[in-house]
Image (tube, rainbow, N blue to C red; front, side):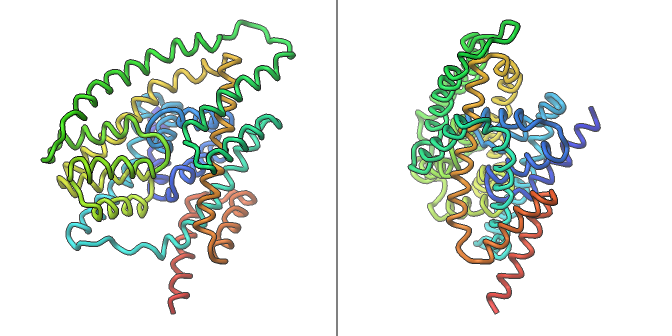
Length: 398
């Protein structure tokens, strides 16, 4: 057990330190490490986890780290993996917040991002290819994934697109398989599985909902650790979707409702979350430091990520039961390929903003080729991309 905990700590500290590019990139790096290299999980089980994290609130990449930790070493692994993944971004963001308070501006890291972004795009493309070979089990799965991708590109809400893909795909896949002979044994019906799942989440969400309803009914003007912690606990418990959804929550609460930050301070906090590796939700750390120093950074970070630990602890033990039910397994398969559709949408949008000059194309293609052909570790590819970006930006500025 001790060896596994040390392995988890080392892996997720490294991923948390080098994981640039948002949830899709972070999940791609995890896939490379825990499926391709270490063989801790199968591709199918990894896809099940991706689908599950898309169905619950909270930052997806962080929840993937927590899932992997739980599978590898139980509850201690869940805690170690989650904390080690969050810690590097929290520390780096706290450092940026200190510099911001002291000097009134953020350090310039654009030259490094010039190469990191296309390298990350190449890593995502590699993960999509590998996961797609497992998740797309036939033409029906391909159509489900393409339909969800198209809906997402047309700006349909991500959660609605995901659930629609899962539910429609479940019925389609079960009807298609209806002529096949049933296997031996008595697999659970979907209703039985859901009956065991729902009470856990009703307990979690019910208690949280009562607390947040009481909190949200009173406007506050003065910042305290208690109010700051509750604010980010509320966001961490209900946050679905991309980082843009997080920005909307923060702007409404911090700027318009409570007037704790100005619009400019919020934009700088969001920029700090994008500059640093790990989840964009580390923006909470920056905000907490601006408002109440180091104690504020700690409380805001804890509030933001605590719900993810609770949700994963409740959901992870139930995934094997889902797999034993034909209907629930079909739902998981459809959710998995729908998640790949959403991941493909993110890749397309990243490509539109990243592949605007020929060096970016070269870095992306070289990264994808190196990862697929020689299976070079994604951490080294990110670091190499940062170096190439710095050299290119220096050369172009001459």
